[in-house]
Image (cartoon, rainbow, N blue to C red; front, side, top):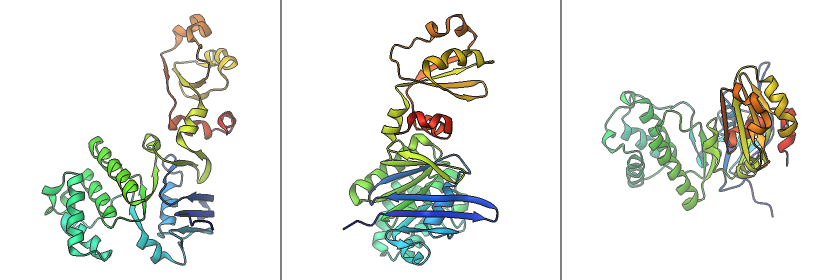
Length: 311
């Protein structure tokens, strides 16, 4: 007997007039997984989140969250999920404590449970002294932290995070990820993340890359990075054409941007000075480093390069 996925999208499309925000989106996220939907701003990530959390309806296709159809059973979906919007959606007139109490009562939590969990979450972000402050007086980062607290208060089965760490400083970023990993470990929470900070997704079980509303690849982050190569060679300078022509026969095709070229290196004995000779002196910057998910996305977003790292 098959187990119902926490999140499943089948052939989902979303149009706004002539604009195609999502095209043929197919996803399956197992219960308890940490999944990342990755891509640049404007790629369709927030549209996908809004659709899966019942805020908008698909133009075509179907989606189920926690076993419920997002169109026919929207109320049932909302009972099972928590959502951190890309932009905070808080009532500026309420205090921090009132915000959490209101969120808890909407979820039918007892006053004792609301008080206990509020204390834990406010302590997580070192916000205990801000209980009585009105939301409208808080800094942007503190409002962001409060929005995250509100989404976690009822301990949802599935947590949707749409660019959750925008506006957070590094210590608070670390705190929220530590807490989310604890929720997964202790309560089996499914986490569905969208972000363009691709380094945040390297701990995901699986990721999918979105560009212009279309899925263009994905898999386990560690495997994708490993397939890309041992190292990356990043060079910068003017008039790189001759340098690229000298390196491509040895290293294969590169990713070109204005004033920059990126090569994959799989040969552990590769020596740039030997490969370029005196031409190496014309370069402004030369760097070798380990590949990362951002490199993977750049590669899969170019059809002429993607085949090189296909499974």
